[in-house]
Image (cartoon, rainbow, N blue to C red):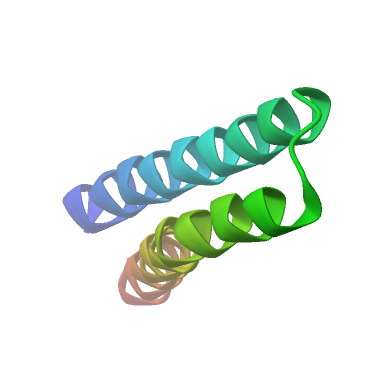
Length: 71
């Protein structure tokens, strides 16, 4: 069950990296002084990455919990 726990932790870390990437990308767009429409378009383009990263992170945490229960 150690494999389940460590693979879940790695998956959660990948999801966390994706979330940090989204935060940095939107922060950079906000600081660049884009117009309202351009900023909305940038946030709209980042949303699928953000949701996918959140999903991957949650899956990783589920794997960790299942691994702990089965150990």
